[in-house]
Image 1 (cartoon, rainbow, N blue to C red):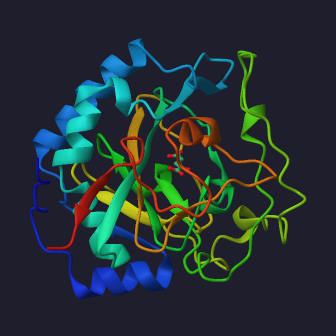
Image 2: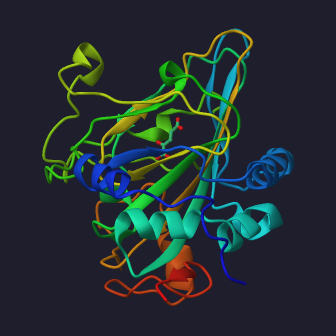
Length: 287
Ligand SMILES: O=C(O)CCC(=O)C(=O)O
């Protein structure tokens, strides 16, 4: 089944912005049917989470932030989005890749009023793949104001630094057992700077967005925030992660987050391989 073309062309300016800043907000990239499909999938998914799912934050008012990843194997709605929506072509276009494989999905669901902000972090240095040509399509399933949307430090994907990744395993108010813990201090070049102390200096960007809009970001960019929701406002975000031309499998001795190495090895993927198999399927290729 071929993927559907995006409803509009991605402009040269948008592509140049992505390459320079490592992030671009692309308005009107998904028709309502895709947003509704993923939203229905997320509703079903929340009732049948994977073993990786957990609450990252539960505050005194009972407001939560729910996270899960790699749920697509059991969710026909996500499978249709991955294999049929314009997402793969959007990723290939901004990456400038001749082919893209799907890596995994992750959802970030904040209940109304949640103040939880995702800690600043990078993705790719802590993944079981290595390459510059990786991106996430961050897709809110309802309107979101800039002050509540994910934020980015433009250009930080190019400076080569690997920042000391926070241990996301501490985000576990329900004390779920067998949660991945991590200590990446041995491989990091630097601590994550105090971006919130001077967001102007770091040129932090985020955007007002409507359903159908998406932000695409390079997986080496520093990103974080979101949350700080008004009392009657929730936020449901579906993300899809994509692997382009230069990406190879890499198992990192110091650890990975999320750590998919066992399942990747079970699919016969070895360090140095191009992504492939039905775990990391090729979804789009040029021509
Ligand atoms: O939406 C969020 O709060 C976090 C998203 C994120 O960090 C990611 O997709 O890598």
